[in-house]
Every structure is written in C-alpha cells, then in structure tokens.
Amino acid sequence: MTDYGEEQRNELEAIESIYPDSFTVLSEEPTSFTITVTSDAGENDETVEVTLKFTYVEKYPDEPPLWEIFSQENLEDSDAEDVLTLLKQQAEENLGMVMIFTLVTAVQEKLNEIIDQIKSRREEEKLRKEREAEEAEKRAFQGTVVTIENFLSWKAKFEQEMAELKKKRQKEDDQSGKGKLTGKQLFERDHNLDTSDIQFLEDGGNSVEVDESLFQDMDDLDLDEDDPDFNPLDLGSDED
Image (cartoon, rainbow, N blue to C red):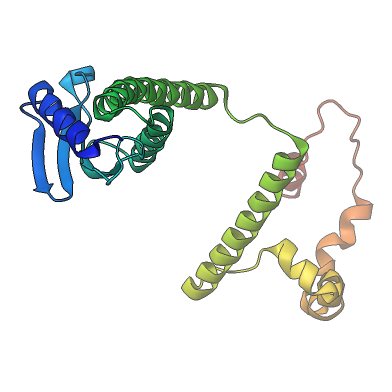
C-alpha cells in the first residue's frame, strides 16, 4: 500500500532544497506551498514572473495536486491561461509520480518562451509602424489616385462650396450697399429697357432745338472739294 504522506514529505524536502529562495510553505494540513518562477532576462533585462501555489490532495501523487497562479508580474492574461493549461497537461502525463519539480520546470520553459514572444511581438509592432509610416509618406508623395468616383465626389463638394461662397458674398454685398446691378444685370432683369432709348428719342429728343438758318446757304456755295488748294477755313475769310 502506497504511503502517500511519506512521498509527499520527501518531495517537499527536495523542493525546498532546489528552490530555497522561492519556496514558501503556507500550511501543513493540508500541505500547501508556493514556488516563484522567473523567466530568463529578455530584452532590456525584462522578465516575466509567476508564483504558483500547490496543495497536496490525500492520494497525491496518484491524483494530481491542486494548483493556481498565486501572483504574476508582466504576464498577460492570455499567457497566464496558457500556463494553467500546461500544468494540467503535465499533471495528467505524470500521474503516479511526484511531479512538482516537473511542473515547475515546464512552467520555467514556458515563461522563457513568453519572454521571447514578447520580444518578437515588439519587433513586429515596430516593423508594422515603420511600414505604415512608409506607406503614409508614399501616399503623401504620390497624392491620391483620381478615379471617377472620387472625382465626382470632389466635383459635387466643390460646386456646393462655390455656391455657398457666392451666396455669402452676395449677402455681404447687399448688406454693405455694394450690391449694385450692372447694366447687363439690369437689362436681364427688365426687358423693357431695350426700348428706353427709342422712347427717349420720341420724347426727350423733340426738345432739342436746331437753328436751320445756319444751313440755308450751304447749297449756294460753290465748293470744289476736288481742288487740292481747297480749305474750308477760307470760306469764312472770303465773307470778310
């Protein structure tokens, strides 16, 4: 018959000697303890750390111990879930044997993988930002490719802005008194203006008086306009 108590006490002594600085007994009945596991140093000496809590059950190691993450540092929730999954897998594979050292070693390797993944994620993020910056610079240099769709959109927006601007200027001119109509605009607004000149000649034109006597003797004058010496100014001098 297996002496579970003896196997548990022997393992506990071995664990304490292997992890003297990270092993802490929490209780003796049931036996419960913690072991802090830290990854190797990563980029900028960064590490991830997890403190595991183990509790022996009555028939350990024929039954797996209880475990949980007691505390953690720099460990994302998704990575913590991976650690718990790994513990379950390792415990099932090592039933019948004391397994705390095996479980802790597996978690140690997992944390080293996580610190490497953190470095890879940061490098990928850096490359992504560099690509986005290059693409933004390329777009700024090349400009926007003109298509029928974006041209029509731009045209509609431009025409709307111009109409609003024209309306605004017209309103400002009206308010400032500068909105006087041009002759063309007056003509377009009042088609009767095209007959105003005729009306003026019929009405106002009759008020102009002409002295017809000034032209009565013009027919009696003997004007030889073909004469090279002809000078209209001499006509007045002859009368004198």
